[in-house]
Image 1 (cartoon, rainbow, N blue to C red):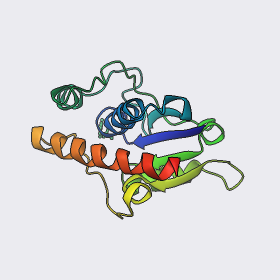
Image 2 (cartoon, rainbow, N blue to C red; image 1 turned 180 degrees about the horizontal axis):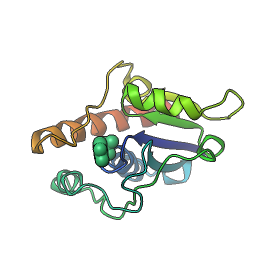
Image 3 (cartoon, protein in one colour; image 1 turned 90 degrees about the horizontal axis):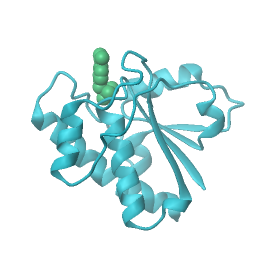
Image 4 (cartoon, rainbow, N blue to C red; image 1 turned 30 degrees about the vertical axis):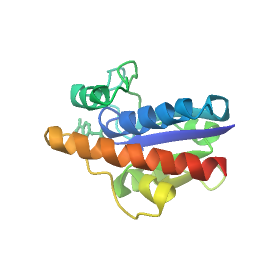
Length: 153
Ligand code: 4NP
């Protein structure tokens, strides 16, 4: 069993898509028993809220339902529970590492680098438009498939 936590700033735009698409491909590949999957935000402003309607809408256009997710803040116990904690952008990784101690079992990495060796951020679409959410969807769709390939190897 591999446990993976996807982390962005608010846990309403990017990490719900990263979580939802990772789960979608895990289910499609019948690997559900192999993974524990969740997401969180480094900030807690949207705690308890569902994903941003624009993230829900872009996923729904491709037949993926992320509407049941609930935002939460990253907490210390995540560093005990998750094998891999992936920051969607480099600032997220910096913020995660502020809490991460060397004694914690979790490994912290940049999402696109871990998935496909790209030292690139998934850009924050919060102040953007539909095209920005579409771009996040595409990045997460490809990255989650590559990440699964790497993690099951
Ligand atoms: P996310 O996007 O980190 O992809 O969920 C954001 C969501 C909310 C805020 C910023 C970014 N905010 O400032 O509330």
